[in-house]
Length: 251
Image 1 (cartoon, rainbow, N blue to C red):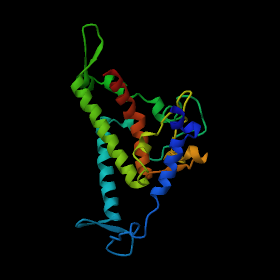
Image 2 (cartoon, one colour; image 1 turned 30 degrees about the vertical axis):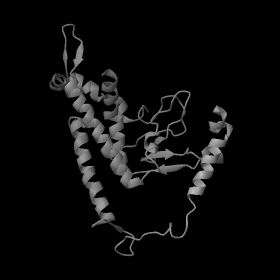
Image 3 (cartoon, rainbow, N blue to C red; image 1 turned 180 degrees about the vertical axis):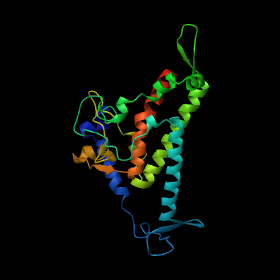
Image 4 (cartoon, rainbow, N blue to C red; image 1 turned 45 degrees about the vertical axis):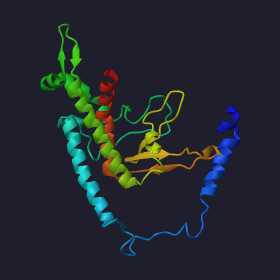
């Protein structure tokens, strides 16, 4: 039975699935009637229950959330100017480079690769080291689980807020798995990354989908959030993501 379920064999099950998707799209006139719930013909607002949502409300919400994200990012980097990327700073990237492990984060031309990491800053700052760890009788650093877990949770929540403002500005993805399918770095012997900084714009590329095999072609879509949001993403990935991975691996 196994060959009938494999898309590589163009088996009956995947073919029927693709046919079923087309059949599901067929509906009668009664079923396909669009319910117009906008208070006017401008196309800039819609009614949800007893509330009217205008595009300006989304804008105000994003700007308010961005202000909170920046303040939270400053707090998690201990208000240290070392962990700030200038708004006009050029982020170097080589989109065609296929070297395993390469991404703009490790490109040595970028400024943060010549700066101490957040982990190094904690280890060399006495009050922060005392907050997150202590040295045992042999001089080894022992990390305190409580403060470290709280710090990791704050980083994770900040990442979720970044995803939220990104979706509100570059459009809702087709499915949630699209966000989880992004690769920051090239995988050795595997996939090429699809997260880039192109012309100073933070870009997320998606191409492969369920019908790609059947059509023998990928429909590439590049999603670009607001430049200010992309700048925050680069700063988050350059400084906070490495220490989150280190602590996650340790614990």
